[in-house]
Length: 377
Image (cartoon, rainbow, N blue to C red; front, side, top):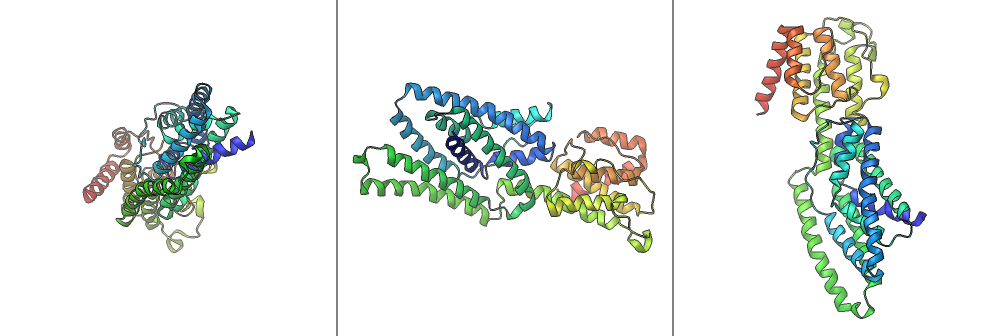
């Protein structure tokens, strides 16, 4: 039982390393609380893999075992090549019209339909003595890779060796696929000549797939997980510079009170994102420090708030109030307007509320956002 569970965990874990599932999990983690994302992954993958394993177990009852083992070996070799495929980021823009857990579950259930992970689960189910333990192993594998995508991807960013992950994943599948073929095929087929032909034909697609990956790396093009992590990092880092410029310093402000000051609070929040990879802040960050009016330079506040809003428009916003960019926006709104403005992702609605509260500030911030868009475009 435990052996089947561990086997299923290993195959799913390596299958998803560097795959779109990790990117999807990391993207959802910037929108929802991590525990809700992982719960959604658990539900979606359990349903998806449950169907696959049930189908695999059914097939094993009507197809001879030796043919199933042969098919499994061929499928594992195909999965090994599939793992080296250069994937584009998929399903990033899933609509968030449902409860976060349901949204993530639906995204993972649909995203894995027909994917190599579901097919791996089906293949494992064909010769499983304990299908339930195969299901537990595959779901744990999905949770492990999703957690790694959220944690490591955010922290390491550009340094994430995604090609190495793809190679490792491919190697595991190619090794076990080849081993299964060796154990299943009649001994008359296992000749020196056939073995050489097999490895020659296997090395050709491996060579070209690796060449495409290294070409993308050499050209400076980021791989999907690197792109997702880098976007979060750039967003927080650019805003951090603008916020630091607002700080008056002890010479003008007096003794620094750190996180009890709105700017100190914001600087610390952004530092946690840029240096520790924490983009969804802990619950203790929910309340902003009490607003204490100071002579912050208005132009710098407008600069930082405009930059924050522009980043939200460009990269998308999270509905999670503890998403670091939301906290920065709220702190800067409090300094600029004396209060925060509710923002549900509708920029026109947001501007309308801002205009009602302070038309002069609205005009300046809107102009700043327009200037930033014009500079980039």
